Structure formats: C-alpha cells, structure tokens
Image (cartoon, rainbow, N blue to C red; front, side, top):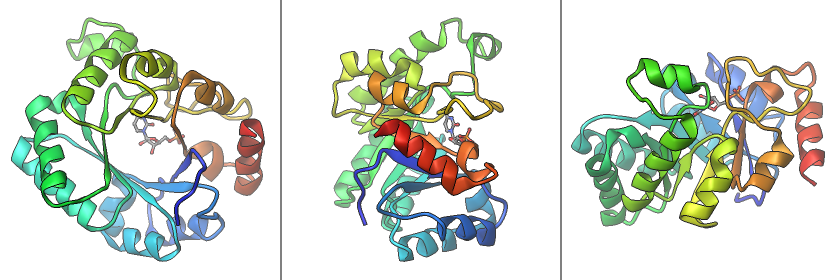
Length: 231
Ligand SMILES: O=c1ccn([C@@H]2O[C@H](COP(=O)(O)O)[C@@H](O)[C@H]2O)c(=O)[nH]1
C-alpha cells in the first residue's frame, strides 16, 4: 500500500519479533517503515517479506559505501526484494552513485535511490576529526549537489539543511530527514534536530522518526501527537 504520509518509522530493534510487534500496531496507510543495519543484520531479508506482507512500503537503510561494482550489486539486490527506497553514502563518490543509478535503470527497477550526506548525529567538531573542515551545512550542500548530478532521487540530510537544498535542487529532489524530535522527545545521540512541523515547513519530503515513537511509554499516542502536529 502506498501512503501520502511523510512519516517513516525507524524499526531499530534487535529481533524480528520485536520489530513485527511494533509493525503490527502501525498502519501502512499512516506511515512507511525503515529497516536499518541492526534489524537487517539479525533478521536478513525475512523482515522485508514480513513487512511487505503486512502492506508496508519499506526504506532499506543500509547506507551502502564501497567500490562502484559492489554497491551497484547491493542496490540491485535490495531493489529486487521490492523495497520502496534504498540508500548509499554520497561520500562514496560520483562513480559509485552513477553505477548504482545505472544498475537500477538497466534492470527497470523503480526503487527510490537516495544518498546520505552528513549523518544527523554529526556536528562541526565531528567533521573536523575526520578531516572535513567545512560546516555541516556546507558539506551537506556539497554532497547533495554531487548526489543530484550523479542521478540520485534525493538525499538523507537534517531538516536544518532542507530549505537550502530545496532552493538548490528543487522540490522533486527528495529530502529524507532523520533527527526529527517532537517537543516531548529526548535528542538521544542526534545533533542536528528539528520538530516535525518545522521540518515539513523547511522542505523535508519525508520525516524519519525512531525512538520518539518506538521508545515512548505509549508509542501510538506519540505517533498520534506527531500526526496532529503535522495536520
Ligand atoms: O543521518 C542519518 C541517517 C540515518 N539515520 C537513521 O534514522 C533513524 C533515526 O532514529 P531516531 O531514533 O529517531 O534517532 C535511525 O535508524 C538512524 O540509523 C539517522 O538518524 N541519521
């Protein structure tokens, strides 16, 4: 089932059972689901079949970053499992992203292909430690432009950069933004955060929300509070 909701709930769980418990409380007409490294490493592709079987569109968030041929093969494998969206790291460079794009196109695979710019857990000091002497905003713009030029459908960025990317790359270029924090939620390890309503106003096309829902005392009430903020 496809949904008009911008919400993507991150199923960061250590077991398939725990992830499916949460999925069974959610409604595919109200959100998409994200499967990341922990859950996929534990469950393998079974989780994708289980979520697709329940009617959800799935963002497989494995952030591929490797040589072009390896990433192209991984992206093809993900798309052939029917995921709605898959991602790579823009820092893997133009040839890597173009190889991934070309592999999907050659095989007629319509999965959205996006690139991670700068992780939302990072701030300027973290970038400096890995040799990037630019602000997060500058680095996100640089990598988003490279992703755009390399044929990506969009990027993962923080909502704090969404407005600048809307100006630079247009409305159709997807801005998938983790680090979404409703006023009631803890930031945890996120650094570049924004509330759901402000993120949409800034130009986010999709909001990734994990712990503010999945670790809430009442996850369904937390989700409803986010939805009413967006209404
Ligand atoms: O830059 C990024 C890229 C991916 N993520 C992922 O999004 C969710 C966020 O979960 P919260 O619990 O809402 O913090 C998580 O799965 C990350 O792996 C990100 O946060 N930032």
